Image 1 (cartoon, rainbow, N blue to C red):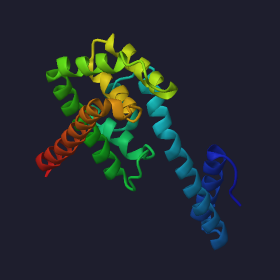
Image 2: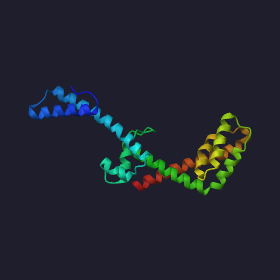
Image 3: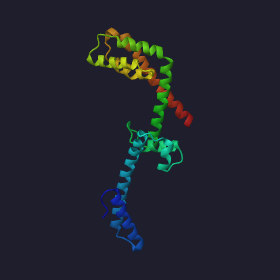
Image 4: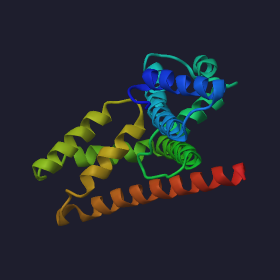
Length: 203
């Protein structure tokens, strides 16, 4: 019987393999060792993306991580991480997770470029919303976050609070709400187009 944590499982499996080499083991022992090995492998595979994320959070570059992961390049190291990392949006396979992450990044870049080209318009809208004095409590909270984002250098930080405050604008501000809706629709379109263009280049 092989049971316990990964280290104990490895020792137990090694004992079964050694016994098999010396003259054979009962099939039930071999089957139990295989099942235990599979379970340990799944547990170890779950630890790997956590350790990679911890190393990245600690400042390790993909180039530094590559030899530790047994791959030849920083691109391969990042790809391995994306394949192993659990999906936050429902992708079933490692390749789908890689594609989803790269689509997201392409979309982020496209939206950021558009936002910087339209910085004056976005800042003007943010200023108008921040100045409203008839919002409910939740709307006021969103407007305050928008006001704080106005003080940042990166205009893309305005987009999330602009989207959040839209639902709190009543009939008195229907025109403003419509303009915010147009911005959200444009951002969504840019993301779709960026993902489509990226996939077209890959294929």
